[in-house]
Length: 295
Image (cartoon, rainbow, N blue to C red; front, side, top):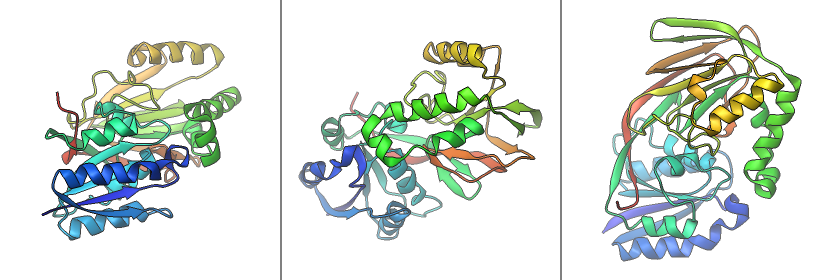
């Protein structure tokens, strides 16, 4: 009998993630899986459980939670000789990775997708010695988003990130960044650098319209200035899927990127606080197989 492990963050989805455990277990059992369930209680738990699934030869790992839970789970697949197929039931604030793969954002619909026979190979990103699922951001704006509390995420959803972003933009702060990619170097003042693996970042599914989950590329944006007027025009460009063509935005794709600064600069990785600069980024093409909806 095939083995499946469900990894669930009970604090996700306004703390109602547990309501979906039984239906996920039933649909996997009906598909012929013997199911093991693990609940996370703290940081790193999802990674540890996923490592157990790899070493135990499991066929499937299902992550029930938000982007943070998914980030931890997929880090458990890093450099493993055996990597189970991944199933995703999004329960978080933004759920960018699920959006990029067109996995239903309704937990009940996503659970039904677990019975799909269709899978897709997807890229992963490497940041220093860890993996990331969707996006890395660096700069004063990225640091402010990491300060969003779990309570605000639960109460306000995506508006929690918007609230913190507006507060930071009002301060008009920026840092000196040096960004190296494919033999080229950019140096200047910027409040925000973004490196994305998919088209969806922060719930905006048109950030990088040309990005594919299996193209092996980092889609990168350097925002050069964010005064009040530029904030409005950048926001409009973002909504229209035309950010790469904004006059104060530099866009490029790369397989490897290094970001440095002479100042202390924070990062945000898949919606959570990341390591301070310097960082090195790269892609791991088509590293994981994910269950996706039938076409």
